[in-house]
Image (spheres, protein in one colour):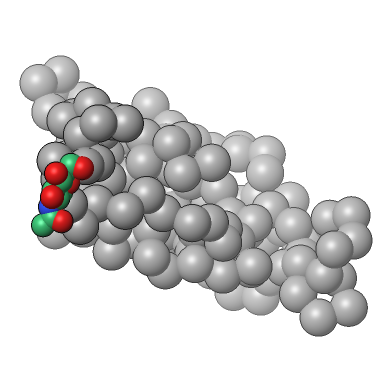
Length: 140
Ligand SMILES: *[C@@H]1O[C@H](CO)[C@@H](O)[C@H](O)[C@H]1NC(C)=O
């Protein structure tokens, strides 16, 4: 879980945000993200962060099968990651000790993304979508 999240986070810096996408329609409501350049390729991807895909598993929905999302009202601004699911993060306080069980690259990625990974919640059923060209009909 933490590993795949880190891949999503790797190299993405909030300050790289550029132009917003136009609004697109999904089954659950309207969505707007932002364009992110792909370094070295002269391309950009439409990026939609923190897109909900199920009813938050909190309250009466805790420990039960996921429930279909209700439609949201207005435009969902998909500009920020949703919270990470609850997880115990590896201890990186002693780098020498940490490097005995992970690569230097993994340690560096982990340390760079620690602030986002520390923002955890049971309400964590969100997707991050990266679309090569501006999507017209994304099915979430
Ligand atoms: C860090 O970990 C190494 C290897 O386990 C250990 O030898 C060293 O004493 C630790 N340093 C501190 C400050 O705890």
